[in-house]
Image 1 (tube, helix red, strand yellow):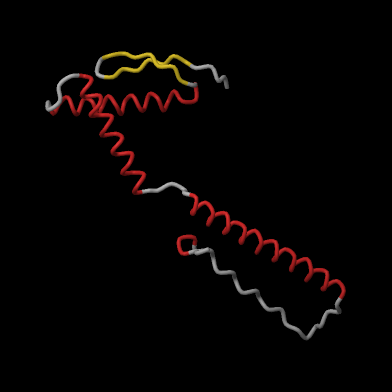
Image 2: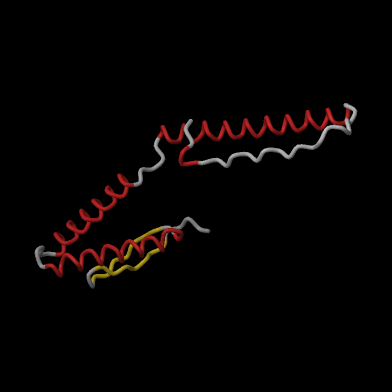
Length: 137
């Protein structure tokens, strides 16, 4: 895929704009233009704001406000969360490595030790599934 920018035509409030963007960003650019056009049309229909520039500023403020509300409602992976996730991954990897090590030792022991026919096989207790929402590091 080429990194060379494309010229994409978008239309906002009956005015056409040519915007340069990377090929892989074309779909998102068009979706953004549709959202902005829709918001600007809504503001214009309510008739409280006059002038394309003012309508554009109000639409941009409304979209920015929506973005901030979404970020607050669904915070991204901050440093503390990233560290906790890393530590949890390390614990899981360590536990799996220990299980693999124990299985190898058991297999080696089984080859060396004589088999006692009087010992009944016991089914292993199934591991409790990881409850990610309640997991604490």
